[in-house]
Image (cartoon, rainbow, N blue to C red; front, side, top):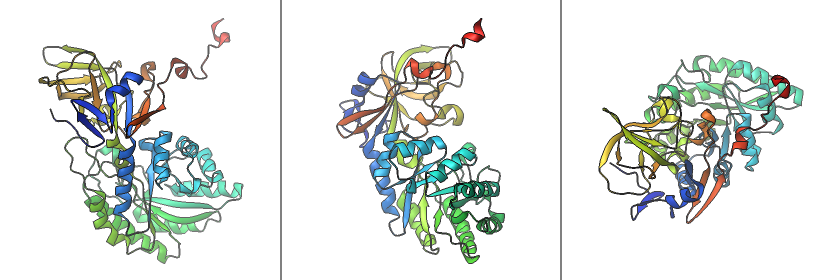
Length: 424
């Protein structure tokens, strides 16, 4: 079998390390399943992206929906990133991490009144609206608060990102944004609202995009639209291309930030706007693993099964996207490879981490690493089957810190109680 190996997760004397720390040392202390992140991966990835676009005035907003751990948010904020939040909960997390509200974008296709009010009261940099009705509501709420809201509109450029249909967001059939053909009229109408300052145009065409062509097509369309909006007398200050850069889960060959910059910077130079980016997966996915223990192995006439203590409640992506995550031993034993399903303990046939996967033959008590688990892992976890969410640990060189402990049974019963009147 192949092994993913980098300076952030690598083998030394047949032992998997995160930076300078043996992964086995961490799981011996905190148990499994457990999320383990490399701080220096996050840092290096951000600086690489930031440097690639140094020729244009820009700002990177970390998409916290990919990994909303407080310390992960703070790592990026300390590096100079803004934070993209998609709900009141993510906004609360960003504020708790010490992020300046003027470095926060409030996004989301279905914001509630309370979420909009929270954004306005906290003076976030701007609210990204996704419909005319939403802008009208923002105007109404801003008027009641005596504020003028900075608003950007997300426009759907109708570009095929050629990714999984569940994470494609830029086609006309998708729920996100407003239609590009009516965008100019909607911008003009919104600009007349007394408590709205239309200051930006935004797009996001999907996730896990591995070629630059969809970005080029969408940015060209959106830049032409931006010029028309500015010509109509609307002071557009920023142009946000969203996120979506692909990463390596298996054998993908995604483009680099520099390769993207080489084709987009000349287009950006044709519009007088600050450029915003909202990467999430790109900044975190390959910077984390999910460590899990083998509980049992078994065979039937057709299959080998490796039953582990991590489940779809810890890593949902394989179940809902059939997403690939490479799985490799935490301690190499040079055993013969087998083909097996790696499955969890949850009472669902969809509870698997991998199917028909070539893996090193393992036995109960061995430990495995589910790679590329730094994005859309912990944030999508659940308490199904009353399972407790896993801890999160961040490694920084030779040091490691628990940033979220494993849930205890009291967590599962938070504010839940027996009502005596129901049981008389």
